[in-house]
Length: 195
Image (cartoon, rainbow, N blue to C red; front, side, top):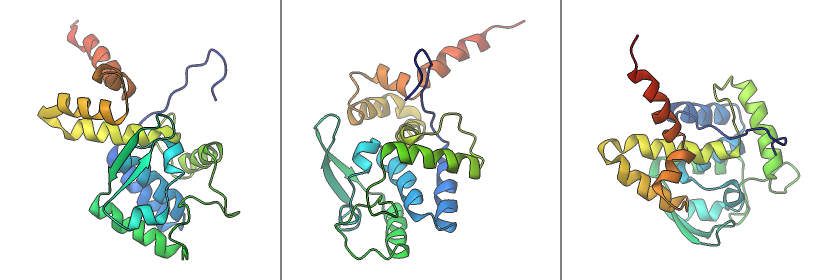
């Protein structure tokens, strides 16, 4: 939690940076963190919902359903076909015996707390020299949103409407602020000036 009167937010990662990090973590044997960052970035879920995922949810079909902890709303998430192969690779590398087991268990066989994940993320940021100023569990959700928005091209407004609904924001304008798009647009105003 941020100190009083201190502005604190999370930043998104560039998509290629995220993919590279997921691959490096896997290569280095950190299968759970590789999977967590991948799931967070491909699904756009809050950490409270990511922590509930089981192997069966991720491997038994090309989608899964959950009730979001924060909103209580039912959400269906489609699993990218190529990413599901990575999920299987992590599952096999970890030698998981029970498909109903939670995906993000610590060595003590308890689900990582959000606070512990943020500590691990600080270590990951340093170890892999990530150029993300505020790297936290929320970075993954923002990475998902930015990728969807940037990939939409001419359909950016439609993407913002869909993201607004997925993120349960009151309007696409809030989603723009959330993703840092509004601030970027405002800062570009200064580039209109010439000297």
